[in-house]
Image (cartoon, rainbow, N blue to C red; front, side, top):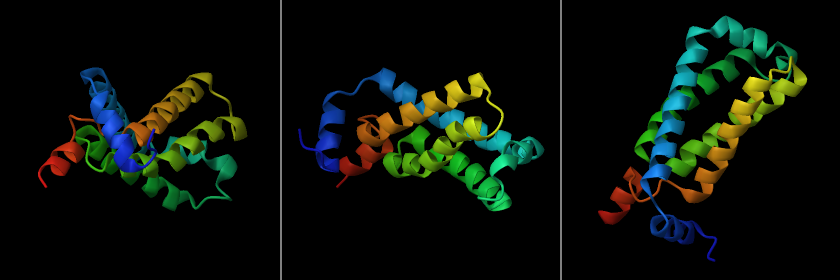
Length: 141
């Protein structure tokens, strides 16, 4: 199997279905929701990152997470630069998994962060699929 981006796109387009498109859209909507949630619950976020606030710039991290989730989520919903939008999410999602081990462990948050991380890694390789803006713009050439 060809592991280049072109080869991955060919495989994804040959194996596409509406369930994977729905999963991609749900992932994007979830990320937009979480980005908005960070903005509206900023105090809880400050408490959450307190164990690692010395290692990360608190407000810089806050703004990166909110912007990456909202803008990246919208891009993922439409399938626009899907792989790049998800790659921007990976450090945040890895941090969400790790924060449960450095701070207070919350099994529900850990499971959700792990599931979203797994789905995101899948879409890094799968791409936007046949029903995405990426595919549409590629066919317009």
